[in-house]
Length: 454
Image (cartoon, rainbow, N blue to C red; front, side, top):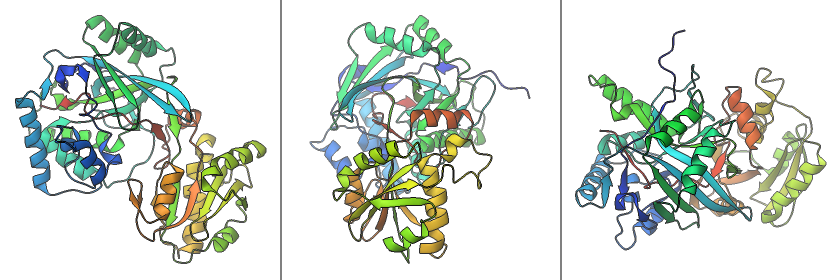
């Protein structure tokens, strides 16, 4: 087939920023909308600060569409802040080196990427590189993001993209930028993560970075819903009439990070299952007998990951899960009895995909055990917490950003983080991981740079 011009060419953009893109903006930036609830939003806005969350999260929860006036008010506030000079748009286009410094599992890491725009392309492989999803997504949260984009005509937060960078060309460009001197823009957020931004507007560096990205696929690590929103927005504008080839909506703001970046770490996304009519742990254990070897776990759930690690070392590479029965408050360590149980059902999927903990939970534990034997064939309800404390909160009936609510939790399945090698292998095979497979920590901040779509 004949392809359009090769992608991704990367584009500098005239970012809208606080303080003309310089100084400390700790009080003004926010975590991504999808990890915040109403209380989290209120904390960021305390003391009447012009925090970006007032625009990025006009309606909670963002999982559903809010009243039209909430989006109109956000757009009006955004316009006013620009008129008052709280936010201003750069005269010259730029790309931005972006480093996050954080502690994970007791170690300090630096994760570095580049904020820039790439072409808003439909998902899929193509000559010269394409934009590829790495996991399946839910259909819900897209209406809210589309309403906000339509009202503000702005892309408020960057999409987190990964690219191979096997020759470390992009990494070298980033290192040179950071070595020039202190960051232009900094922020330290409530979670202790430090964000630093260096503005890059000189053409040779922009060209060197574009060259490093030539013929590279971009995999979406986080922001599948927001990228789909950018595609829908572009389609709507094209449907409404002629759109010039250089219209800003044809480009989408990403932070691109190489797979080889030393600070690329993945945290776990556990599963809490509920809503099963016939659930008892005894029934579950009986039904799972052929699949799992289940042994008692530690009395304190906070120690389950250590117990899982020991079991994994003893299991010669078999998958290991933690189980927690909310009714009895007892934990268990479960080891897979056979090496590749999904092979019969998914012979054409790559082995790396079949051996993902999250694939085994979805297709073996939920679809072959929980649904048919414990819930009369009906779908099971899920929540997706990242931390053991959050698992316990859901058990206490708390509504967390991960889902949950009163009387919901029956069984938690605790997982180990998906290895980066598996993400790479599955993406390379052009396969999608199941929903909520990866949790790249930390999230990117919203408000360091904003992309105008007009």
